[in-house]
Length: 187
Image 1 (cartoon, rainbow, N blue to C red):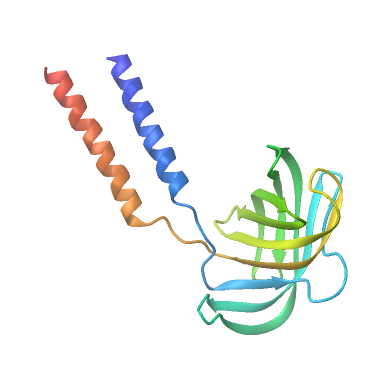
Image 2: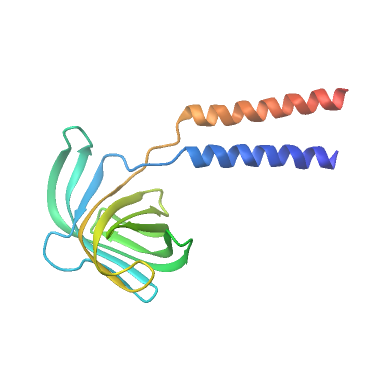
């Protein structure tokens, strides 16, 4: 009996992990459009601290095409987080804070950065359920140590909710497991 429960629990957890992995979230409108709006290095890593210092200058209302935006008064955007680990390709940072004027003030749960030919892309989840996605040009160093970057471009905002079909698939799978368990106990 304990073996059956363990097996059913393992199947359920595997299905849930599959559902979670296939339901990637993307930033949706309304989202802040973030840029460096000037010359200089606006992205850096010094020691274990990764910083993005940019400007939120527009509110994206539709990703288009065409991209629809509303100009807003420029707002300082600041993200600070701390190095956690690497798998040799991606670099992971955790904790830290994110502020964008009165639009949001939250914390980072996980941020990942990868680089290809000097172009770096990053994404981070916020504790309040939001997300930031973007990229920059590495101007000195590399992701494994101290670096600086410029030509920052990013969008930050709410995320796509997990589709209802994915949750229905999970509950249907759980129902099938329960039916199989009843049949097995009846036999």
